[in-house]
Length: 139
Image 1 (cartoon, rainbow, N blue to C red):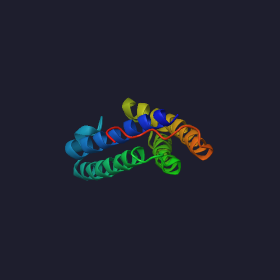
Image 2: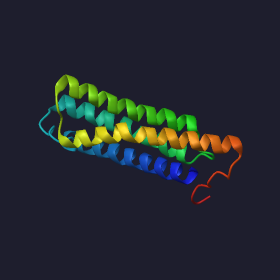
Image 3: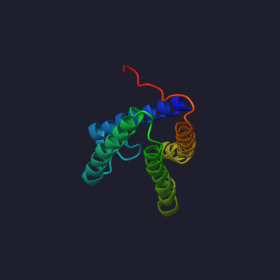
């Protein structure tokens, strides 16, 4: 379980950093259907991209800890879940977005339970002393 948690945590971290930096660099062009959204949305999107890159760095930090801090993983996954719930609220209030946002909503609602389950399993294994934490690559 520790290997799976570490791999998924690293993947989430790198994906969030890359996506965040893409939004910083591309602004409205990074949002399907929003290329003509104007300067206000462009500014907001670039700022949120920087915040998302920072969120990704928090995932990467967690992945490098030994053992991975299960409580931090749960908090980070909870933030991701909150984003998915926010998209559902937008769907109810503003209607259907671009199809790519629907796919993102599915990921944002589907991945957190996986992280919660893996974090719980890792925490239990560490508490019971089952196995050893997986060493970080390059250490």
